Image (cartoon, helix red, strand yellow):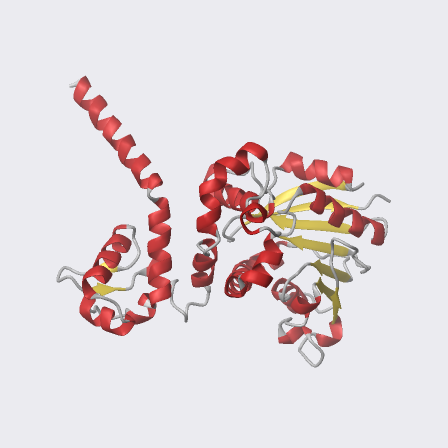
Length: 349
C-alpha cells in the first residue's frame, strides 16, 4: 500500500512539473487566441467551433484544438454539446473589457521575449540583460527603432496596468498636508488624474519624456478638468528632476538597474526641499508567497530586457540610504494586481 501511495505522490509531482514545463505553450495559446480575435468571435451564447473559425478566418480543426487547450486551462467554457462560450476569465481578453488585459498578454509574449527567455541561464550566470546582446542596442532603443509594434503594445499594456491600479493606489496615498505632487516618469498621468480628482486642493506635475507627456490624458492638459491644477513637464529623470513638490511619486519605475534607480533618487533629492516625501509604488519581493507567483517571474523578465530587478524591503532601504534619504515605512495596497506596496522615504531636514 505504501509503495502505491508513494507512486501516486510521485506521479502527482510529475504532473505538476510537466505543467510548469509547458508554460510557454500556455502563454502562446493565450496570445494566439488574442491575435486571431477569438475572444471577440465568442459571444454570450454558445457557438460552435466552425462558426468561430469562420469569424476568425481559421481552420476549424486546429482552432478546436486551440480552444480545447485553453478550456483545460480555465479560459473559455465548453458546453455538453461541444459549443464554446465565455467565462469570467476569457471575457478579460476581449477588446471591450474595461481592464485592457489583452495588451498585457501580448506584451508579455512579444516577439523579442521568445529570443530572450531561452538565454535566461546566461543572464543569471553573468547578471546582464540579454536584449542588448541579442539586438545590439539597449531595450528602449530596440523598441523604438526596430520594433514599433511591440512599442505600441508596451504603451497599451502599461496604460492598462496603470488604469487597473490607479484608484486603489490613490485611495491608499496619504496626502494630508501635501499641496503639490510630482508623478515622476508618470506615463500618461492616470494615477495623477485620480489623485487630483480625490484631492481638490492639490497641484500636480506630470514629469516624463517629451513624447509621453504630449500624450497625457486630456483631463490634465490645458482646458481639461484639472488643467489649471496640473503642469506637464517634459524631461528625463535620469538626467534631472527639475520639479519642486511636497511629494514625489515613482510608480513601477525603480525596476531598472540599481545604478539608474540611484541616479533618479539622487536627482529628486537634489531638487526636493528638506522634509519632502518620496513614495515608491512597486512590488516588494519579500511579500507574502501568494503575491509572488507573478512578480517573481516578472523580476526575471526585467533582468532579461533591461538588466533590472524588483526589490525587497531591505534593498529599498539600501537604495534610499545611498541616495541620502530616510526610509519611513512600507504598506501593501489592497486590491491591486500584482500586489503593490507603498515604500516611503523623506529628505532629511
